[in-house]
Image (cartoon, one colour):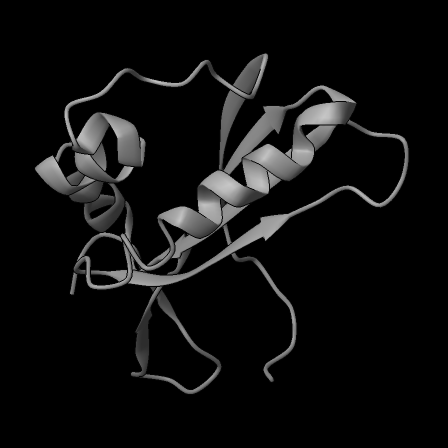
Length: 124
């Protein structure tokens, strides 16, 4: 097991820790639908990446303009491997770019990457 292991309540049991990466993207109020459309156009691009556990695009339901792209990874090394892979670059290009065309203008005006480990919660 990697360095991201933690002991469970039962002695001798070890579980890999999920890491959560959140890309907080500031989007002008009139551009949110375009952001959602672009994410839908590349749905599933990361699904087969080693260590990938899940993804959500969270749309604000209040006056905020920050959308959250939440991904869960088995460990930090799995996220880093994807970040430095050809699949990352390919998945972040538009359909136009992938067919040799121009890149569309960015939708977001700012972006921050937040990193977390799950410290508690309940199972589904």
